[in-house]
Structures are given as C-alpha cells and as structure tokens.
Image (tube, rainbow, N blue to C red; front, top):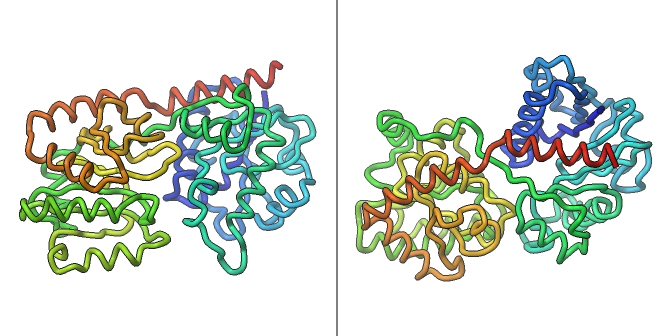
Length: 383
C-alpha cells in the first residue's frame, strides 16, 4: 500500500496540527515497515523543517515529495476550483491523508481527512479577516470539500464526531474517532528542575497554571475572576498563564493590571515544551475550563505530568478528563473558584487526583493512534 500524507503543517511548529501530524507520522512509520509512506509538503519559505523531518525518520519506506508550487496556488487549485490531482506531485497512491482540511482531487487514491474541531462554526467570532481574506468563509469552503470528497474522516474526539454529524450532516459510518496523545516530553519532573524554571520566570511559592492561546474561547477572563476570589483569602498563591497571544487578548491584559492582581498573575507568553513540562509538574492545579475544544490536548499533557486538573463539564473536556479531574461549569465563576478552593485546601484530594491523572494519561498514546489510523487506511484500501 502506498500512503500519501500531507505534512505541510509541520513547517509551523508550535501549532496543534503540526504536533498531531509529526507525532502520528513518526508512530506510523515506526510501526509499519511494510507499506510505503509518501510524505507530501508545500511551503514557500519554510521547506527546511519538512526536509529535516523526513530525513530524521531514517526509514527506507519513506519518500519525500516537496511541492514546487506555493501553498496559495495549491489552495486555489484544490480548495477553489478543485482540479490538479495530488498524484501529479506524488506519483501513484492508494490512500491520501490530509491533516488540515486540504482536499485535493485524486486519480484513484482513497481520501482520509482529520478534523480537529469545528470552532469555525461554533465560535466564528474568534477568527478574523486578515488582509481582506475572510478566514471563516475560506475554512467553511474547505469543510465543504471535506464533506463531499473524503472517503473517511478521522475525528479527534467523540465530541468532534458529534459536531460533524450534527452541523455538517456527515454520515456516522464515515467517521472514525482516534484520540490524540501527549508527546513523550511530558512526564513528572524533579523538584530541582521545577524550582529552576520557577526562578527563571520569577514565580514564588504555590501557583495555579493555565495553558493555551489567549483568546475568549479559552475562558481566561472567568478564570481570572475566580482567581480574584481565591487570592483575596490566600495571598501566597499565584496564577500563571502560558500561551501565545490570541484574538481578544487586550481585555485579559486590562483585567490583570488591576492593582489587586498585578503581583499575583503572571502572563508568560509562549513557553517551550521542556519548561512547560516543569511548570505542569510544579502546579497545585492545572486550570482548563474552556468553552469549546475539539480534543483538549493540554489536559493530557498536564495529566502526564501528574498534576490535578480542573476542566469543563462539557464536550471534549469532560470526555478526555473523565472522572480523573474536577469538572466545573465553565460559565460559572463560583463553580471554577469552588473547585480551585477545594484542590488547594485539600491535600488528600490533590494526591488522589495526581494518581488518577497519571493513570488516565496512560489511556492515550501515539502508538494507539497510529494503529487505529493505519486500520482506517487498510479498510479503505481493501474496500
């Protein structure tokens, strides 16, 4: 079987789709020496990471095909007028897997697409017009092609599968749920390493941790309001927010400039994986009461580091955390504050949740995801 996979997103390291693509391909290549993997990539200015990735795999059954055409041209050809079969660039294929709603025509290859979430429908206001380019319109057009042409769709959670059925009316039989997993870098760190990182970021004493792009969907404003109630009674605890700038971040900055919170809230921006693993390990609790997620990868990352998790009692957050975290109503400041108070004041509960977190994290692995994805390919190939 010749398996084509679009790895273009690996050029944008630090994004969820880049991590998904890299980890999944690495795991599949490691497990499957029989089939041929044709890794297709398109990037105008950032081809080096794509070439380095395929070289690092070091497998005889991996072939690299980097496009001579820029992404914008391919976007027009494939998601605009839907012409120019992928095999023109890759050679013959049996299956082609797109990890970012790229839906090129094929000559005979069966098509698989991964859908990470439907935030474009659920929270369109968190997307914007950039340089006159309407992202919402463009993404919805991409999903139209996914719905029309994909032979199989991989959803990263049951929540995303339900959204695909309810919103896009895609038949359930076409959708397979394959969970993501944390990278191997996420595991409990020593107290010495935790303290080293706390010192670097000037974090003193106990702290709560939030991770994610700073945008309204992540619900950070309510987290800060809930933390204000906690900080009024406990002057020694801090709130640490790690994540890159996102849409609507200005309101968050204004809230943290409140004189009562200034010394208690730290916004770090993007943090590298090694330091993030240390921050997870040292936190009293990880807070993730998001309003919507397709999966919620930071939950699994935090659990892999053995930290108690507070997350939303809805959608994929409830699905992924299960009974191993404290579930809250993300719309309720009182609910979030109550869960925080419970964890920081109850050492026995904290220890129980740490054990549960590590156990739950073990349910997710890239090896498992790779095996399930390969099975999707095989079913299409044999049908």
